[in-house]
Amino acid sequence: MRAEPEIKREKKPAMRSSLVIAIVLMILLITGLLLYRFRVQPVSTATPLSDAPEAGLSNAAITINLYFAGQEDLGPRLETRKIEPEATTIALIKKIIAELKNGPVSPGLIATVPPTLQVKSVYISHARIFIDFQSESLDQVLAGPTQERLLLQSLVLSIIRSIGYTYESVTILAGGKEISGRHLYLAREYPLSEPGNTGDQPDKFGDEPGNAGNPGDPR
Amino acid sequence: MVKGCVRYFMKKIAFVCFGFCLLFPLSWCTALPLTRVCIDPGHGGVDTGITGAGPLYEKNITVQLASRIKEQLAGYPGFDVVLTRFNDLYLTEKERQKRIVNCQPSLVLSLHCDAAWDTSVSGISLIAIQRLVDPLLTIERRQAQASAAAQAAEIMYEAMARQVTLLPLRRPVIGDLCLYRSLNCPVVMVAAGFLTNPEDALLLSKPETLDEISRSIAQALIELTENGEASE
Image (cartoon, rainbow over all chains, first blue to last red):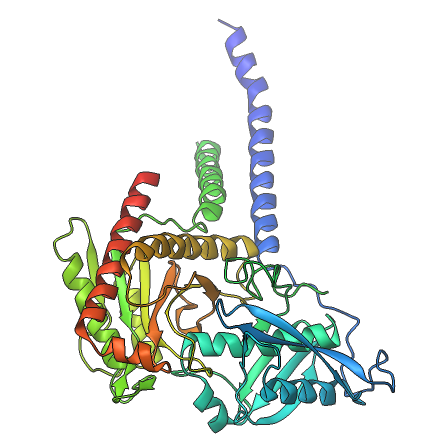
């Protein structure tokens, strides 16, 4: 009969400490989850932020990678082209867009960037490439999910595969403003990701740009 | 007495925290089993969408398809189909979003027509909507949403492939659509033919084609529901 209170007295600190440990664990778990959710995406540090001459370019003719679409499956198809080197990255991007507007030479490929599309300006800020199109000319192009997807696919793949994976995303602007309103298919930003298999089954999941990798992955 | 109360409440708080920790990550996962489908016919009113030869307006084709799908599914038990518009009504982006959110759908079916700079391109396209860029969304959450939409699009493709004969059916692809970024349910877009292609445009002007496409989509939605129920 006398032993009971003694046992109770011994249990009290044990219960209290286990409760404290449980609460601390809960707090740690919640903090961990919140930190994981709102973690900062890695930013590429090897990015030239100004319109400076690209180190990789030589005075000889360079090869650019242009991506059009396959006539059958509309998947990305590569066509290489030799051009005169450009002094800056921005000039090179403009040249790539101009070459895309000229359309493909290889048979079985279709044009994805209409010649009517007018580039207002191209600039680079914080590892992001901004392509500002003339609003009216982009309005005429943005019709239907496929046209917009092909346009985006061509622009992003051709630019990143010609200038290298030093940039995190390509943002499309219309008249200096982010695209919104009724032309909604087009994502304002498109991450630079490896499109996976571009030759065999390009229309399957996982072969689309932006699908194979994580946005923000520095490459 | 006071210590006992404090201990009691601390236990309760610990239980709540534990439950929160368990349920919070689980709530991020998107479940597929369908009960309510929100069909969103694209464009409307002053927003005509793509204009084909005729003139044939995308806004009219999408609403006709939506009405037909709703009719097809009317007698199906346990199926609730809600349309964002029934007639030639212009909806702003916010109004459209509000209508979709209010009906709390398990799946959003976005209806559109397609266009391509090259007029030889034809066929029906299926697009699983995925948020490609969203800094506040975890990779896991993004993948869960994408996989739910992709799974739905794949099932729909398989079902539609058996029914559609007049137009070629393209394999599903993934696309981003700003309009549906705030939604937490899978979104699949069906673009019913290229209005820039003369043959597609001619076919889409005929009621038989619209009947066939709507029938195939309705069947696809039924199979999607059955698949969802089977997986429960």
